[in-house]
Each structure stands twice: as C-alpha cells, then as structure tokens.
Image (cartoon, rainbow, N blue to C red):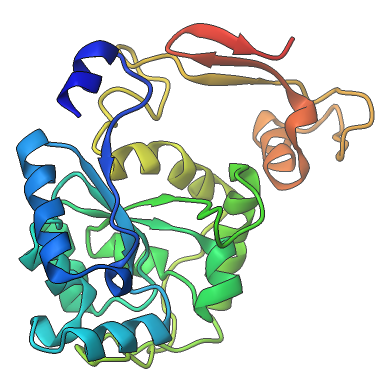
Length: 269
C-alpha cells in the first residue's frame, strides 16, 4: 500500500482502502488484522453496516458476545470504526450507535436504490444528519442497476418520502421497529449536495474536493440543457435553479459536454 501511495503521489486519483465485505463473511481475527492494517497505513475503510434485518439478526447470532452482536460495536472492537471509515447503508442503526459513529468520525453512504431492492427499508438521512453523522450517497452497484449517480440522487428524494409511511424505533434492540417520521423533506438540492460535498465530507477529503471553493481541485461537469433529443424542456422564463432541477430530475449524460478532473479536461466534446 505504501509503495502504491509513493508512486501515485499527493494528487492520486485512486487510493488504497481496506474493504471487509461485511461482518457475516469475516472472522473477528480477520477484521482485527484489517483494523491493524488500516491503522498502520492510515487508509480508508469501507464496508456495509446494518443493511438488512436478516443481516443484523445473523451478525447477532454469529457474535453475540461483542456489543450484543451489533455491527458498530464489532467494527469498533476490531479497529475499523475510524474517521476514515465509510459504511454503506446504515438502515438499521440505533441512535446510540449513530452517536458512537459521530464520535469516531466515521460516515454512512446511503445507497437508496440498493436499499429499495434489498433492505426493505431506507436510510433515515435527515435523522442521522441531525445527530451529526457525516452522510454521502453511493450506488452499491452490486445491489443496484447503475453506477450513475443521478438515479441515486433521485432515489434519495423518493426514499425520504417513504419515511412518512414507515416507522422506526431507534432503541438499542437487536432489530429496531422504527418511530414515525418527523424529519424535514429532502429535495433535489439537498440530494445533490449529498452526492457531491456530502460524499467528500464522508470521505474526509472535503478540503480538497466536493464544491467550487477557492483552493479546491477543479472537478466539474459542463451541462448543456439545449441538446437535441434531450429528455426535458424548459421555458426561457425559467430561472437557472429551475433548469438545474429539471436536469437533476430528468437529464442524463446526453447533456454532459465537458468533464474536468483536477483541472484537466478528460472527456466529452
């Protein structure tokens, strides 16, 4: 890992990451050794956490003696709950676990498309965010249908709406039963933030990327909303925010005419 870092240099686009698949496929010894590697090389950690009811129950049966068999406790005890750790999903996190993640500096990547398909639940983004947890968005391409982030942004808005008709009890139970939803509405702007600056904050690299601030790397898309055969129209009276909303909700790569990474144009015409 260190050799790869040395070759890539300070502006590397790809970084090493410790990736235990998820707790059900790992022994405690393996997780502990991965935790040691993460500490030794000061690298990021990624895994899945509290994704489905079946997974939560299975982990409890596997390791009941470690923090009542809960994912957060097991990742903590094995040295993987760090300020460079990003965990996918977090659908079935109890409040005390969220608070522990906040203290550790770790983050959640909500994957709403995959959650709809597999979790039978959604990440309570506003609830977790209000408790101070860093949150971004992810595709979880193994459980979704696209690596494109636009469908994920749209799904995050839909997932937030479903919170009006599901219930959560965030007590420290093995399988929480969720309380009625009182959180704010997630709109396209907040969902887009989660996919950009929110993700950078989750990865602890928001001082470098995630927004158009002076001193940050120039990572950008040039969007043309006048492409032939595009999926949406707008009126000349529409404000820029309305046009942007239409692209987020209905646009696609046909509208992307330029891509820059670290200030270098890398694609499209």
